[in-house]
Length: 130
Figure (cartoon, rainbow, N blue to C red):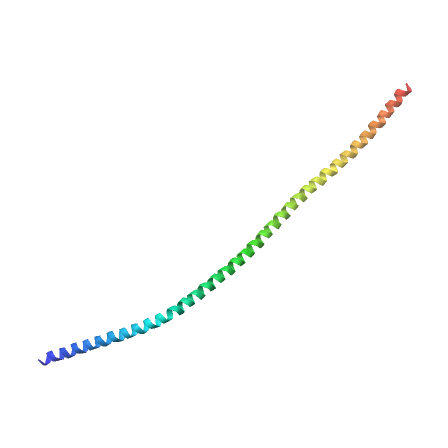
C-alpha cells in the first residue's frame, strides 16, 4: 500500500501544478489583454499617423512626378519647335536658292526684253526708212 500513497501524492502534486499553471496562464492572459486593450487606441493613432505620413510622401512624390512630366513636356515642345524651325530654315534655304534662281531668270528675261525692244526699234526704223 505504500506504493499507492506515493501515486496519490504525485497525482495531487500534478493537479496542484496544473492548477498553478492555469492560474499563471490566465494571469498573464489578463495582463496581456489589459495592455493590448489599453494600447489599441495608441496603436490606432500610430497607424493613422503612419498612414498620413505615407499619404503625404505619396503626394510629394506625385508632385515631383508632375513637375518632371511638365518639364519633359516643355522640353519636347521646344524640341518640336526647334525641329520645325530647322525644317523651315531648310525650306528657307531652298526658298532662298529658288529666289536667287528666279532673280537670275528675271535679269535674263529683262535683258531679253531689252534686246527685243532694241530689235523692235531697229525694225521700226527699217520700216520707217522704206
